Length: 276
Image (cartoon, rainbow, N blue to C red; front, side, top):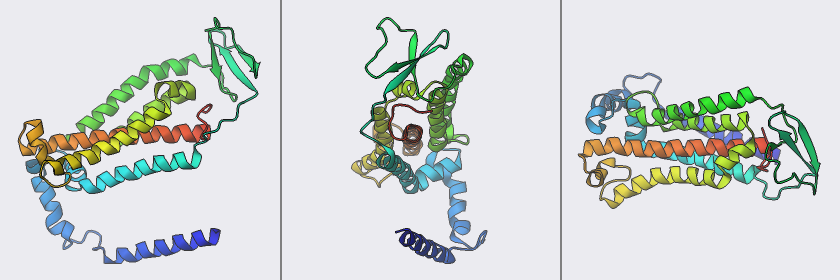
């Protein structure tokens, strides 16, 4: 089986390398990209899409199909992680650890035992617990909202400055991971559980593809955002700008959710009970 995999990879790699022979030379001024494609994007992007950032116009409009399937690849990575790592049956541990939040004193309670209902000052901690650090938790709670606001800015302002759904989604996902690291996995799951995360990365891809499908229903081509003008009550050029923003939001949500679900599975070995 190992040799079969190596041979398959070698053959596929050789096929891909052979395909590059047909590519134009690097920096060739006579290639199609240099003769008419790139000049059109540079000269007509603002006129066609009302988006000053040419990169965003190319990725989300002119090359919208490619970007949609890139988002689908990220979605597939999250699904593959669930199939490979997720454990549905959880083995119960023989004991649990609890920590007194004020003093840091830890308790080990054997299976069958439980804390008194009034002992609200105790919090459950992982078996491989780390010392309680109030500074890390407080700092995390302070900076995470600003990270999330910046992530939303990057997504929304990708029209005018470097940014977009991929970059903003990564920053937004990193903020949730930072919360999980500064607190614990259970605290993160209480705020964004597995089902909610799955809903987000499904909704992100669906928002992108659904926008294209809506364009078809309105009588235009797939991902031809100018068709949205009748719904948004704007001119076709402005509708293309708004359409780009809509799909960028979908990309950001999908990327954020996949990052979080990958983290949950990796740090907990697919058990979703304890982890970094």
